[in-house]
Image (cartoon, rainbow, N blue to C red; front, side, top):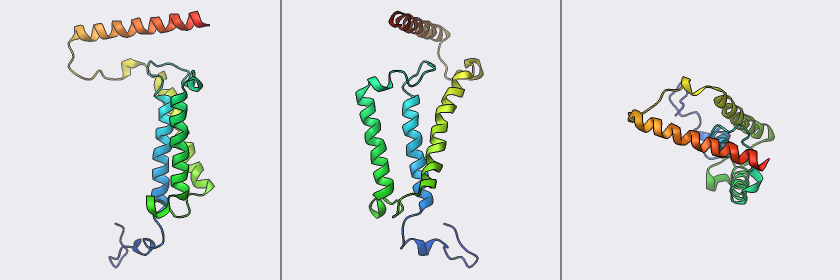
Length: 152
């Protein structure tokens, strides 16, 4: 709660008008970041092309469309019922949400460039289990590489 010099809540008079645009922007940015993270999370084996096969998964595309359209409707027309600003967001505010969300794709790419040795190994696994897991992981990567070569 932000208070003025006299101790009165300076935002109290806005409560009767509409929920904050600031919080609507924060909410929208959060959801848009999740949408772009869904694209990044499709590839978990440090694969570079996160967009390969994107259009072949009908269920994924359907979920993305439903979430995106739902978010637009909620933010622009949700009003009091969904505690967003009554008039939605302006074009500039949408850009302030979309640009940082898209930036998540570049963060994902950058993290793939950082070698694994810079990240600590967490947990107290038995070294034999770690070795076996690495061997399984290498086997899966080799199979994937071979299948990609055979397809091309």
